[in-house]
Image (cartoon, rainbow, N blue to C red; front, side, top):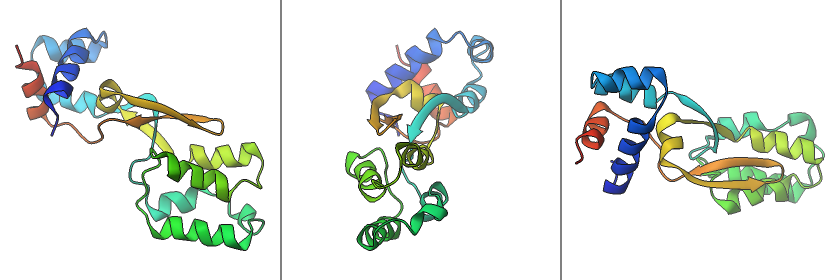
Length: 159
């Protein structure tokens, strides 16, 4: 559920949008279509909020895993065992750089990039804080989820 402040921000974003599809849906007050549009991926890269074991595993380059010291491999396994992991949190991203510190910056950054995704239009509109680890910058979202048409209605019905 969105807070009152987030509803105000969402309303402002919808009303200011110059996206032709948003403008068309807004003009006829099609809240269902607006919700669909705001749930589409944006161009904003965001840290995974609930990275699963599979996502963490798939982000790593297995050919490099043998080169990681045993203690660091144990730490990586503990991180994976505690999935889902919120990589918007600084300590979780630091764990990546600590474990994979012996790798080149490009390899470490490829792993970090694998722990990001595209935020939805709504998530990007509601903002957050850009956080950088290594050479990767992504949004730590202030809100994460999918909008329903009641969220759009609540926002647009505000005075």
